[in-house]
Length: 374
Image 1: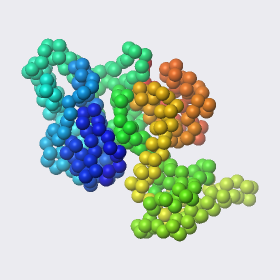
Image 2: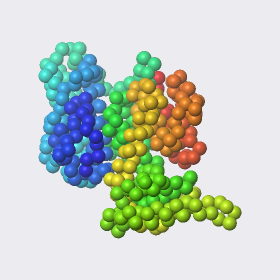
Image 3: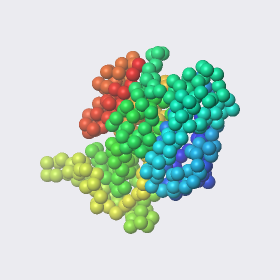
Image 4: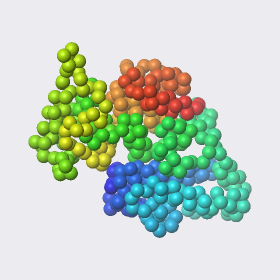
């Protein structure tokens, strides 16, 4: 499955419409979840490699990797063809044991993590570079002296599966990069949407009575609803079947009790599972979310001209607010905007709370913000 826009990373990674990326991995059999986990593992490894280069004074024009990025090509570079979560652990652990390989013309450093100081002393570089490499192998604090946001970072990068399953509620597992690609940011947003909202493959009503599906996609307008790539009993739904389901959901939305109260607008999403027979796939849910996320990212960038320099936790929180509420702007969130512009962490924490979401989601946002340091 190929859900990513064309993108080239600083180390040369590119997707390929043929299903084999420039690092040699064949992702044609990957599910959406597989792709998200693979892209997260790839991004994490790239960031760690770039950290090493940065410690050497190389901050741009990085050496370009190809099929040497993941090591041995056996079994699709260790990832296999599907259900790759466990394989990711094996690949990353193997790489950590072998050390990172730098293929620049002036740098050759294989198995550094395994060899330690002896490996460093064998490098054909000057003493300053050796000292820099030695320092780069130690835990980093990443405190910023230029009054710019940064994040705490006290150990090596976790393996991809840990990050995917753990970092949503544990900001110390977040990484200190600010130059994350849009594609990787979308992948993280999607994982957060699944964690916070869940993904429903049938239509349901939100608390305002709007017809919703997937990861919170608003399909309340008939012209939007009828465009769904939906099925009925695993067969492509006809427009008549979609219209029947749409009308049923509108009836449920408008239904009131004897006192004039709406009876279906505060129901759990699962309540609506048997109300219609329309279903969408995981890929369709991801596609609907992608359109939403594209608009959200453009909106938030428009609100904050320095958004791309924000630390990752703050980016994710702001995007989650916009995805969830659709009303992130100076007028609606004046105190939050003031705290961000003033780089007031406590002020940001106090103003990311949303009245119409659960405690878990608000706690997540606050923990994310607390991981930021000046």
